[in-house]
Image (tube, rainbow, N blue to C red; front, side):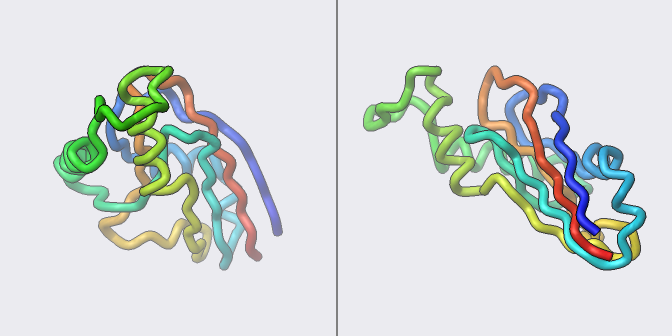
Length: 139
């Protein structure tokens, strides 16, 4: 079976946001899959997806702080700054983290580890809704 849907995340402020439940609620077809995979693809160049700690919110705060230190704004060697000081840093962070995830499906559920959750990583100060394409393939 193949299934594909497109939806938008609500607007999130800059930072790392746990969206596992939001995604699962948008794909009830997941329950029909005994074994398979889901691909989650974010159609943007200034936000990203990653999997990490789902229990302690301080991990998400530390992610934001670390990435801002690793890829700072207002560097004088940046030339792609038309949309503001967060413009090229957002693109760089997206390239580091990536814009898609592939997760196994087992018995109708995402087969994530007990402490794993899906993050939407919003790298812009004033972003809009983010569009995601979810493709399920399995039996």
